[in-house]
Image (cartoon, rainbow, N blue to C red; front, side, top):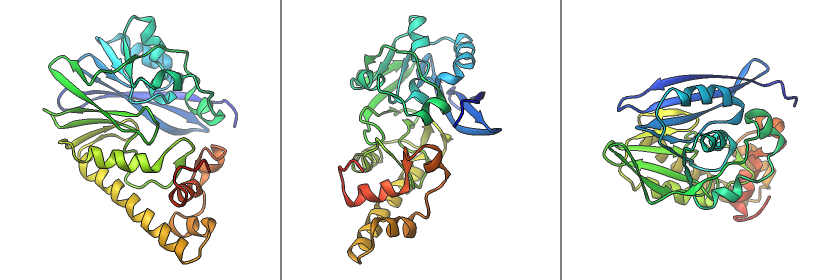
Length: 273
C-alpha cells in the first residue's frame, strides 16, 4: 500500500443544533472509512483523523469550541487533538487514553488516517456540561479499553463513538474484546435514548433498535459458532459457513481486521489470536 492518499469532507447540521463534520480519505479514487466529529454547544466530540488536519483546522476556527472529549484513542477520533491543545482548548478522555495514544500505528491506519501529533488529555468527569446540554459519560469498553459513550438524556441522544458501526459485525480488529463489547451493548441498551450519533455512520434515527440488532446478531453468532464447533467443524470451516470468505479489508489491513479472528475469539475468549 502506497501513501497516495487525499482527503475530502462535508458539514451537516442536525435537529437540535448538533453539527457534524465528516472527513474521509480517498485512495485510488474511492472514499475510505469516513469519520465524524460532532459539535454540541461548544463541546466537540472527537476530532477526526490527522490526514484531514487542514480541513479540520478551518472548520474548528469557524465556530466556538470551549472543549473536546474523545470517545477513545484511535487516530480517526483523536487525530487532531494536538491542534486543539495548541489553541488552549482542553481535551477530555478516559484516563487510560493518554498512554494508548502513544502506541505504534499499524501501516494500514497510518496510510488511511495518518499519524497524529502527540496530544495531552485530561480525565473526563462523570458528566460534561455543554451550554444547556449535560452529557453523561458512560464507560463502554470492548472496541478499545478506553472507549466511552456520551448520553444527553433530555434529548435522548447517544454519542456512541465506535460502539455501533453497523448492525452486523463480521470482522474483528486485533485489539477488540468481544466479551466486553457485548457487555457494553447490554449496558447502553438499558439507557434512555433514541437517536444515536455514530462516528462512522452519522446520525442514526432508530439508534436503539440498531444497537439492539447488533447485540442480537452477535449473540446469535456466538451460539451458532459454538453449535458448529460441537458438531466437529474447525475454525476455518466455521468462519466460511457463518461469515463467508475473508474480504478485501483483511488483506489490505494485513490481518488487522479478520473474520476468522472473530470466530477464534468466540471459541477462545481472552485469547490473542
